[in-house]
Amino acid sequence: MKRHELPGPRKQVLYDFLACAIVILFHFTNYVVYTEYDRIYPDILVVAGGLCAVAAGLTALLRIPSAVFRAAVFSVLITVVLGDALFEFGTKDDISLRLIALSGVLVLALAVMFFLREHANLVLIGGFLAMFVATVGIGLLAARKDGPDLASGSAATADLPVVVHIVLDEHIGLSGLSSATPGGAATSAISRRFYTDAGFRVFAGAYSRFFRTEASLAGALNFDGSAQATRFLTRKHYGFSLNENAYLKAYADKGYRIRVYQSDYFDLCKSHGIAFAGCASYRPDYLSRTAIDGLPGPERARLLFGMYYSSIAVIKIAKLAGKQLDRWAKNQGVSLPSPGLWHGRVGPLAVVPTFNNLIRDVSRAAGGTVFFAHLLMPHYPYVYNSACAVRSPISAWRLRFDGNLENSPESRRRSYAQYIEQVRCVEKRLTVLFAALKKADTYDRATIVLHGDHGARIGLTDPASATVSSLTPADYTDAFSTLFAVKAPDITPGVDPRMLPLTSLVPYALDRDEDLLRAAGDPTVYIVDGNGNASPHALPAFPSLPKQLN
Ligand SMILES: [Zn+2]
Image: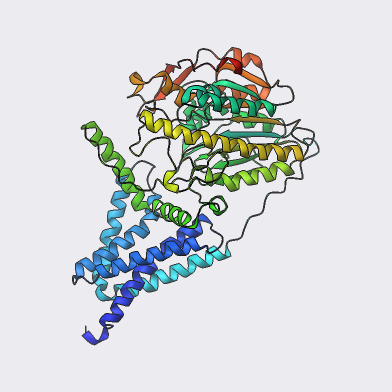
């Protein structure tokens, strides 16, 4: 090859920079399109500017005169970008298959980049520019969806009342709140007033059978209090789908139209024998622009950058590997420092558009429709204060555990303080929903069911087969106490202090058969071991509510 065919050194620097920048910006644009940001906001440009600085850093690295090093820099970049497609293979926690696939891509990319030598930059510019243009084009062309048409219910079902059923993920019960933390009793009293004033009967001692969402809901929605509730579930690539749903099937058999609003982690729309009239899914990592409007610009850019790099498969794999390393080190009695990466969660922010759509649809509905929603709120991270303003800075958002996946009494207290504020925000949102029903003149006849799927899960120790001997009653309360409130014309508002499982309360909400509650038996929960086998454990009594609350 003759030397003069190559661009001059200055041009080579420019091409290197363009190659790195286009590969990185192509990947970032893909993410922005995925999040459905619908305009170019300054925060996108700020993050894009930061990524151009990364490209400049890589360009400086490429000045090192080594063909192998040059090929390695480009190959790592390509592997990081293409790794996202590979992450779709394998199951949630299995990283070995993905590591093999990633290594394969890296070796292949190394071979190609080494072969291309000085021409690698131009080939990358051409290839990724084409993909970049295609991504932007698809993003611009993607049509916006309108709300469903809800006015046309059949004449036979129009007389049926509206049913609104919302699972508020991770919402602890009144008894759990009453002693969970300093201030818990006052919080419990506010929640009690909120629900009873709105006409609800609140079951203060409601509890879930399982610690995990999918098992708890699979049992509750199939009225199955046994350890085998997971048999209603099928594992999918991300999360689970529910095969049977006795609760919604009963409504469908009565002639109700069923509309579901769900997270894509737990798919309710695959259940046998139900013709769903609507099924809207949201992603738990969905960064809704409307939800973060209230944040200061730099915090929005920080959040966008955090969510972006958390979405990169290589980072996810590194986190999973780090978790396994941490577990291993802990068994050796060593505590590793936390790398301080962004957790990649936005909690109830992801729910905002779905909740707004639910309110819109409910306010349009006549009779004969069940609106069933599974909303990740007040689920961690605790992003809202009690006025429903997004907490700033975003680094102040707490999780249900500390960085090292555990709680100390102090971290538990601090997480609960934020959690309680988020509970207040949930009640504010519910007030808007109730107002929509009242405005549509459907509130008084409506059946409304609101409940959690497990506790706040801000315990010192999570229930697991390895920890069961050291669990305290407070750990059980943190894990299993859950909200249950139901309103219907034939239900007297008030507080029922009995300890009752969701597996009895959900069918009770359907038929109002008091015998179901009397037959609930001794409080029992299931703790699952590493092989998925569930063993029964007696649930210690929750703290009783303060006297004046009964
Ligand atoms: Zn849950």
